[in-house]
Each structure stands twice: as structure tokens, then as C-alpha cells.
Image (tube, rainbow, N blue to C red; front, side):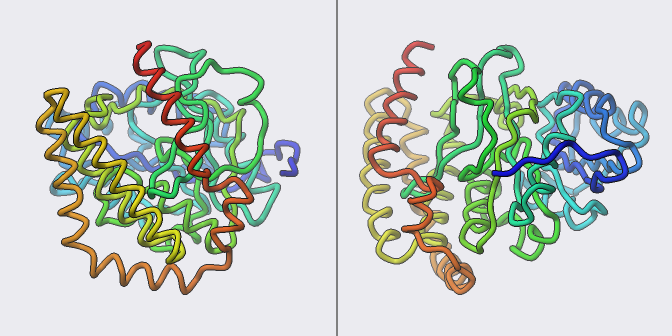
Length: 351
């Protein structure tokens, strides 16, 4: 990917940062203050907090301490997808940045995040380098790769930061805790799929970007820090709500975005993977998580008709084949996915 020197303030595009909040008062000060301390020109920066009917005083705190921040109050907790879509529609910037409330950005983060879209007009989304908030030498995500079972894995997850994560380039997807997206593309593509509520929506969005002929880039100097799962409230992979959403939404992804043969193959592999997860949770005494796997499949089947209609719309706009996405490294091979799964299991064992 070609690079350009960072432009002057006059050459920087207007950006709207959209932050979804639900009872995240404890995170907001660090997040919003770090945005205020950036070196991005204030006249080209809009900050929107979309609040999911918080009851912890979040809205009053923002209005009293950060009056320049625009607040959109919703009447209930609508998860992640719908609030971000609401914020995108209300935004005025040429580019959107979806930012979690449990993050802190560095001074030059946003300026670095816009560089790839200025260097390559085909780039419509850019992933940040995320390090852990309390382990700032450790990678949370440095881009990611999609998988045939409809999900994806974060590149570098749990690894020590180093030169291998300092190279700019293209990536399969970026974590939506700090993802820049061209607003026109986002709205034209339909935004985040609101049937997802939360989880796997960034895989789906970036997948569509690649399918439609665009690119997703990784900006290693756009450094930020992430608590991880501050919004969900837990990092546990056995949390029933996370298991349910990830199981269901991965199935949505593979049906919508893969070519027919690969969708069937992915579905079979996914059934095997989910059966293994169900049995592991069951034998480990995590009964709610095991039931959540079953509920995820049931939720997927309830919406199958609507998902197939979405599939027809996505496939109609496709200009890149699955073969090309494999060749570009956007989709990981099964062998690569299994290798990463083994690495993550060893990592979790050490932790």
C-alpha cells in the first residue's frame, strides 16, 4: 500500500467519531479527554456519543464536563449496531470512526488513521493498532482475517507488540472498537446489520467492503488502548450472551457473504466447531454457555428467510470472488484458522 506524508491541517478531512455508551460512565472521562488532547484540528472533528438509555449518570457527566460533545439519547439499550447507525446518519463528517467507550487514543491517532484513505481511494475502512489499556506492550488487535465459518480472528491478539505489527498494509477487517469508515460507503452498504445487535458486525461490514471492490487498511501508527469487553462487562468466552451472539452472527455472516459452495462448506465446518464448543462447555460445567450455542442456532434459523434475502442483495453487488479474497489473504485458509485457534488456546491456558 502506498503511503503519503501526513497532510497539513487544511488537507485533513472532516471526521465524526461515534461512541456508543451504555452505563459506561467509568470509562468516559479517559476516552473523551484523550480525544480532546489529539492534534487533529478541532474544526474538522465531531464527537457524537449515542447513549443506550444509561442509568449511571453518563449523559449528565458528558454535558457537564464535555459540552462540545454531541449526545444522542436512545430510549432503550439497542446494543452496538443500531446506535452506531443512528450516529452515522446524524454525523456530518466525510469519515466516521466507530470508537468504544472503554478506549484511550494517542495524540496522533486520528491523523494516522486517515492517512490510508488519502493514499488510496479504494480504501474505505482503516483499522487501528489496539494495545491493551493495562498492558501497553501487548497487542489486542492489529487488523484481522476472516474465516470460512463466518467469523474472524484478530491479528496479533495477546502477542507482544513489535516490528511485525508496525508495517502498514491491507487487512481482512478491523475491530469496530476503533475503526474508520467512509461515511458514504457505510450508508450505501446499509451500515451495520441491526439483526446482529452486537458481535461480528465488523467482520460483516469489512467483508462487504472487499466483496464490493473496495479495500480495508491497517494503520500501525494509529495507536490506541483498549480495556476490551468493557461494554460487554466480561472478557470470558463462556459468557452466555457473547456465546449466543457470536454463534448466531457468524452463521449470518457465512450465509450472506460466501459463495454458495463455500457457504455450504463453511456451514458444515461451523456445525462441527459449534458441536465441539457445546460439548466442551457441557463437560466443563458451563451449562448456560452450552445452551447458548443451541440458542444461537435457533436464532439463526428463525431469521433464515431474511438472511437469505440479504444474501441475494450482497451477492448481486459482488465484484470479487472468494478465490481472490483467499489469494489476497482477506479470508484465512482452514489450516491457518486451526493454527490460530491452537495458539489462542495455548494463550488462554497460560493466562
